[in-house]
Image (cartoon, rainbow, N blue to C red; front, side):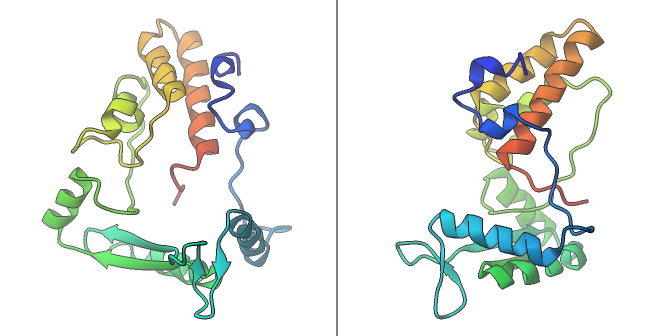
Length: 190
């Protein structure tokens, strides 16, 4: 939290509270309860259900997302998600493409969402600038698929890179994890 303090005005207030806990359907929670909570959040953000059961903003635009896939491998995991989003009025189209087109669209950041597997590391550092750094967000063919642009994230990555010991590295890693989780740039899938 001390590493995050200089960025308090730039970060969601939740970053400074409890650790992130993903919604769950395990008791006492439920899918229905999660959908109701999502409905309330969408309503607060100005989205309204139209006569066609599709969410629309004040300008009448539909809330539509395209899930880009390099084949049909994700159909089994994404289709139930699409059904649940439809209950909220969100249209999720699954777009399977051949791998060459998939790669080209990733390189140009020409997609709404996709699945990316981030490999772990026992010594995280500079690679996080490629994955979450502000400069990478504007660089075609970089790994910043989420388009993260945050001076707090940039500073935390630099702290990770400059760390000379585990005692310096771990707080920076934990702070970055806290910022990323509470910023909702990524949706944990598995």
